[in-house]
Length: 421
Ligand code: EPZ
Image 1 (cartoon, rainbow, N blue to C red):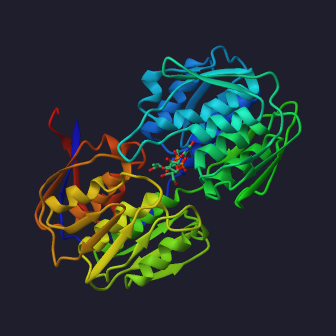
Image 2: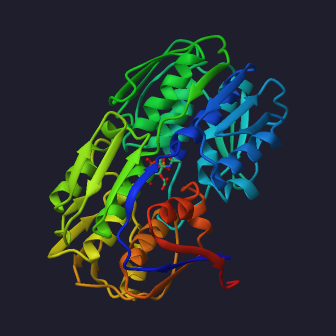
């Protein structure tokens, strides 16, 4: 398994371009199952998770290919098998996103239960109960969700927990249901809004995306469309933290500043100068950052996917920063690895108390999940000496060409063969 070898201490300077958002591209690819007409998607990032979704679609008889340059063409006209098998779903839990579209289009779906992952149990009960409210019969058989329905019917669904893919699954299913569906307490993430825009381009009648109440008027069928995936706000935020933690100056272009209000506010609170343009954000950090307190929340609150990155920033900051993770029950794995680099971290349940230290020291560390990997890379950029981040297959799931982008900013990072276990 590959690792990154990082020599710390280099200030990052320059420009880097944001890639398309993984967490928008994945539901949008699933939305292609809702129609027998072709979709042409642009700005799709070249990531392991995208390739997994394309493989999953291919297994169903869907033609889905990367045409190069971020373009993906798909056509579900020849859908033959409405099954998402365990061997693929276990590698990417976002496979659950095919459940709603398959059920709506095909009347039946068998999707392997995703199971848990490093950051938590990740149940999908709200996905299933929402589909049942729309008239589906949903059962668990041999580790698979088995859902059947005639034509789904519109329903009023109140999701007791804000769930991003839960909202997306039900919004997609509702586009072909008979009548009106209202999703209350819906997720407001920009990726939900981007999915809704793609569905509208396909002829769906969706309103309220981006608010906590989404209304869908079901249609008999949907058309194909062309759609450009929005920029990845978490990748953007990660590179802004890279600029801040190395006391450098980094501009992320091709970005959507309006999606990063909470992150920009925290960078400014940490002492960074942050300039914002129509499609770029620039961070300039002339000194050691100040520690900041973080409390994750559904959008537009501080994103849980940026929590690990700010843990790395707090690790070298002046002062004490507390980090409260309210979304997932086990998203502090990176804290234990940061300690190996010399971070002073105390975990008390869902709260991590980080006492900033003047410097970190390089050491071998192990990535456990996608954003934890990013946190360890950021820490390695400032740790004295060499940091080996092992199991970087995690990072390849969600960051397109990350070492090339960091090298372009002046980092000393290279990919190397890592230990087999
Ligand atoms: C999405 O995951 C993202 N993934 C995650 O990004 C992100 O961390 C998360 O939303 C929160 O923003 C994709 O969009 C592909 P949730 P999702 O359902 O939808 C509970 C990354 O790093 N819940 O919003 O799976 C759940 O346990 C990944 O790119 C239920 O209880 O997350 C959690 O506590 C990691 N029942 C909370 O809701 C359900 O049926 C939020 O989870 C569903 C969720």
